[in-house]
Length: 85
Image (cartoon, one colour):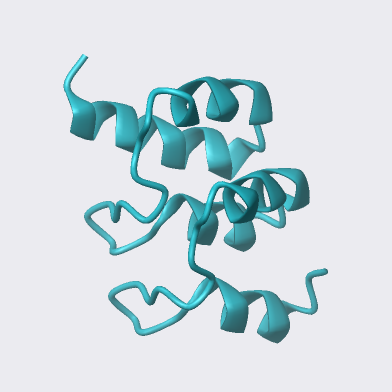
């Protein structure tokens, strides 16, 4: 499968919190800070949907909580603004 499609799947699994599928994709060496067409990383997708376990997995894999999307919002700011833990 095309690498960008795999990256997009990682973002989709992050939105739903499917850490099992995420772990399998991460083992393939995907970029944790890949951005989709909206500038979202997998960590941003997980954060916006309050998927705590998915976010923790991505942080352990090296995802940067300060990477901004096209609206200049970062996962760090998103979590704080929404009162997520």
